[in-house]
Each structure stands twice: as structure tokens, then as C-alpha cells.
Amino acid sequence: MKKVLLTLIAVLMAVPAFAIEVYNNGEDTSVDIYGTVRGYVGYGMGNTGDTTAEAAGNKLTINEGGMDHNFLYGLQGNSRIGTKFKVGNFSGQVELGANEKTMYSGTTSGTVGLRQAWAAYSFGNAGTLLFGKTDTPTAMSGFISDIYDTDGGLNGFGGSNTGTRRFQVQYTIGGLTLALIEDDITATTIGGLTDGGKFTPRGGISYTFKNDTLMAKVAATYTAVNGHYLDINNNQKWTNIHAFGVTAGVKPTFGSMYLSAIFRYGMNEDLYNEAKTVANYGKATHDAYSISLGGLVPGVTSIKPGQSVDTDGTVYNVHRAAIALEFGAKVTEQLTAMVGAGYQATIQELGDDLSGVTDPSFLVHSYAVYVQANYALNKYFALIPQIAYYGTMGSISGKTAGETTTLDDSQGGLLVGMQLRASF
Picture 1 (cartoon, one colour):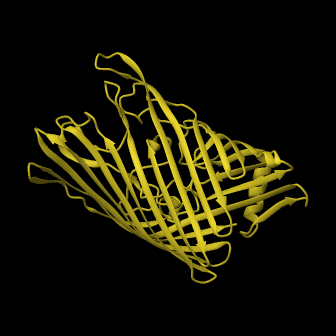
Picture 2 (cartoon, rainbow, N blue to C red; picture 1 turned 60 degrees about the vertical axis):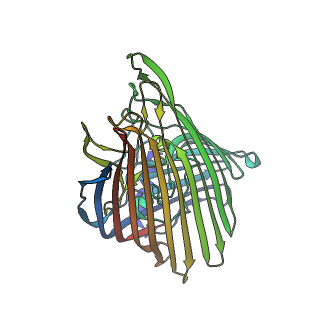
């Protein structure tokens, strides 16, 4: 198999970029190779955060954020090359990505890795059984066209994940897909767990409908993180942190126009990396969001949404609700224009994490608006300019000495750039 892959890559490098059918016997055996190279160029500017505190009617500036200016230029990590094959009822796919984890648990991205590596067997009308690494059922590609954050589809600003590739066993019949999924968790993910926490296998389900005028999908997933914590008497106790997500997308087409919408709600989805709370500072990718405390709490400089377990066993979860919309129209045979917007709310009870502040709560509003055009020079090469603004506003509220205390923060980034996309 290694020799076959090397041969296919050599063929690809030796010929122009077009769809390559390596082998087809005209009956039930075929091998194809494909790929996409995606780069970007542009300019971004962003505010690193203005934070104010108010207590008993007195307002205090904690931090005046500065402006970041960035020249945007680079190769996207989702550039990839792969091969698909089919032999009778047996099929498979192997795909290398420019920046991807391997198939092994605990590995990190940052180098060339396997984006897809699976094999499947079709039982005809009885469905298909798949085994290997591929997108989870809750991946929602094709609904939102936002190109920044590596074609992130507004994830963190109202959209949903466009691709989460995990090792899994998957069964599909008709438009229905069921999956048992393996996930990774780092030892520092959940505060209060002495062993960091371990995932139970994650379940996923989706139903997809497609025809010439409508694409629709509903999906859900659930898992739990199990681990030990220490109670107030320093005794080791066992607990579960539940994590789930539900999402729905619909994209009807009306002649040369379409309207696309995504809705999502979940709890602790960030544990399995299918949702996030982020801010943009004028870069092509988003950063994890945190709010500066400016010395208000001794020993704590900033705080970000994250799960924790109290000494009485209380679990403080992170909830997210999101919506994103996009309207597009085909202007000419080569040019499609679209406009979109999204909003996400991140909500968390903080428990006793902030000493001296009673009943604290954490609310983060994230939103985005963008205008995009997709100009296809031909069916293999496209120029995709986009102007987008991403804003994030965080607020912590509670009571200090009986007085209501609030801490407000605002961050945002404006990006003007273009993606260059070659596909075959």
C-alpha cells in the first residue's frame, strides 16, 4: 500500500492539476486521486481587549486593549491529497493533510498526517459498515462558506464544526448514520479532576437529505468524561461530566439563489473539540477567548470558559447556543456572491472559582458578519475574496460584600483577504 501511495503522489506531481482516474475496469473496480491546495493573502486588524469593572456605581478601566495589525499570508493546514478506491462492495479512502493528527490517540497536529483512513463494506440495500478515521456524524460542511480559521464555517461565532475527524465504527443506511467514536482528552482539560478525566466512547447520529433543491441535516452526539476529585476532607470521589451537542442545518435553493441556516446547542462540546469560544485579533485564525481580571482576584490574571468540579462534587458546565445564516446568489457562470452572519452565546456558572465574589456567572457573546465572492477561473482554480468582522464580548457578574460587581470585556477583528484554492 505504501508503494501504491508513493506512486500516486509521483503521478500527481508529474501532470497538470486535474481529476485523475488512475484505474477503472469499467465494471466494479476503480482508483482515483484528488487534492486541494489552499492559500490566503490579505490584511487584518484587531483589538486585543478593552476591560472595565463596575462595583457600587464606580467604574474602573482594567485594561485598554491595543490594536494588532497583521499581514495575512500562508498555506492553510487543510490543504490535502488523497486517493479513493472501490473493489466490488469494498471501498476506502486514504488522505494526507498538511496539518493533521495521526490515527493514534494522544498525538498532536502540526505536521503532515492522516486526515482520512478508512475502509467500508456495502451490504447493498442493507447499508454500509465503515471502520477507520473519518468525519463524525455532527460535522456540518457545506452550509456556511466562511473561509477564515481554515474554512471554519463560523465555528465559535454562530456556525458549527465543518470537520472533526476521529477513529470510529460507522453504519449508514439511507441518509441515517450511526457511529461509535474515539476521542482524546488532555490532562489539564477539567479543573478539579485529579486524574484529568477519561472519555467513554462517544455516540453519534445524523440524518442527511439531499436533492437538487434542498440539503438538510440533523445530528446529535453524546459522551461522558469520568474522573476522580478530592472532597473537602481530601477524600477521593468519582464523578461524571456529561457532554453533548445537537445541530441542524437546512439549505434550500431557489433558482440561482440559496439560503442556508445552522442551529446548534450543546454542553461541554469543547471537550471533544466540536465547539469553542474564541476571539479574533486580526489574524487568519481565531484564538481561545479569555477575560482579563486585572488583579481583582489575587493570583488569577484571567479566566476563560472551562469545566470544573467543586469539592462537594458540583460540576460547573459550559453551555453554548448558536445560529448562523448565509444568503448566496449566482451572479454569472463564474461568480457567486454571498453574505452571512452568526451569533453564539457561551454560558457558565463559575461556582467558587472567584474568591470574594458570590454567585458569579460568566456570559460570552460572539458574533460575526461577512461578505464573500467566489470567482471560479475554471473548475480547478478559484479566487475567494472575503471581508469579515468577528466580535467577542465577555461579562462576569456576581456580588462582592453585598454589592453587584460586573466585569465587561470587548475584543474584535476585521479581516480583508482572499483565499486561493486549487482543487482537482
